[in-house]
Length: 171
Image 1 (cartoon, rainbow, N blue to C red):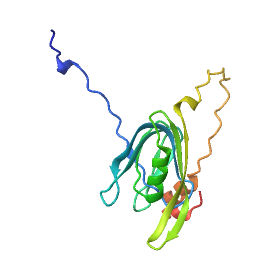
Image 2 (tube, one colour; image 1 turned 180 degrees about the vertical axis):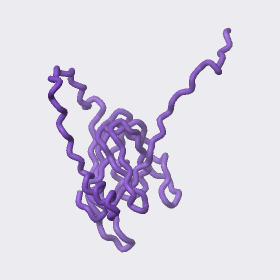
Image 3 (cartoon, rainbow, N blue to C red; image 1 turned 120 degrees about the vertical axis):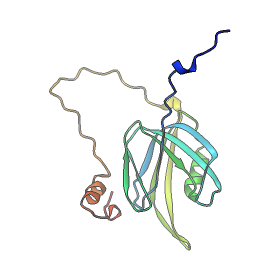
Image 4 (cartoon, helix red, strand yellow; image 1 turned 45 degrees about the vertical axis):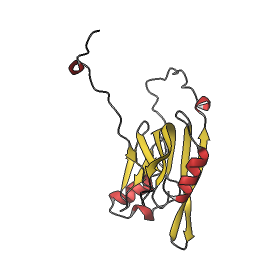
């Protein structure tokens, strides 16, 4: 048996995902292909088990930290969600996604509760078999410019760049 020289074998490049933080405005979403899902692979703020969902984005997404600072993620980025919030936890567990499925999770609003505000979400899942196949590229004249894609987060970016509170802007 031949011995392997591990010094000559390059390491595997493992993508490091970024965690999504939910803001306070309806419309924030995570849309993409499920890379991994664990029913209780995450932990909530009280160190209790909760779902963890890793998604490769098919649409740009944003994340907000505790101070409201926004981070943007582009198509193809790997993001992770620890689903400790009550409605997020219940919805993701009900979806029960599998690797390859397409999912869309949208924060739809806030509901007042005796302990503060609860974030509300909508959930959609399409099986991997329903994923659209990339179309064969069609010849495009060199002079044709690609169509601009509207950015639903533009108002927030503009306010933040001007030093304003991103949560004061509509989506």
